[in-house]
Length: 132
Image (tube, rainbow, N blue to C red):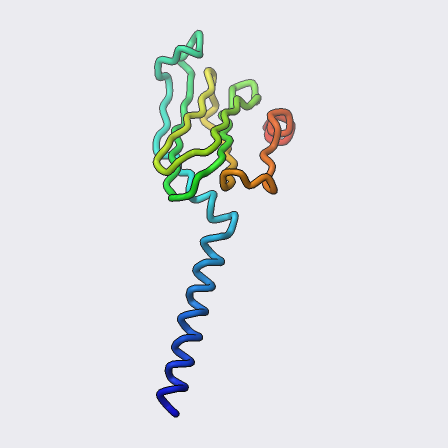
């Protein structure tokens, strides 16, 4: 009887640990950790910027095994945000956000690919909300 109770408690404990691990890894907040800024640069030559001497670039990588949809924004000196989106971002894929006359500030939004329940803010919403 003691063995049976021991096995039952052990099974419940393992099930509880697995359930908690699944719930934690399935949370939306966890996906934000998947997009990692791994590098940034100032004044890098840039074909998109007439004068790149004040340009700022932020480089991001998908560090998880999930496919991601991503939106990043880099702030210009005039407080407007330049935005960039990438859908179906595979593991280790990258995206770069840049501003030609940058402040060094950046923002990003992440969701699982195809998760239409999470709606990224529009460029206008970003510029209205974060123009500081």
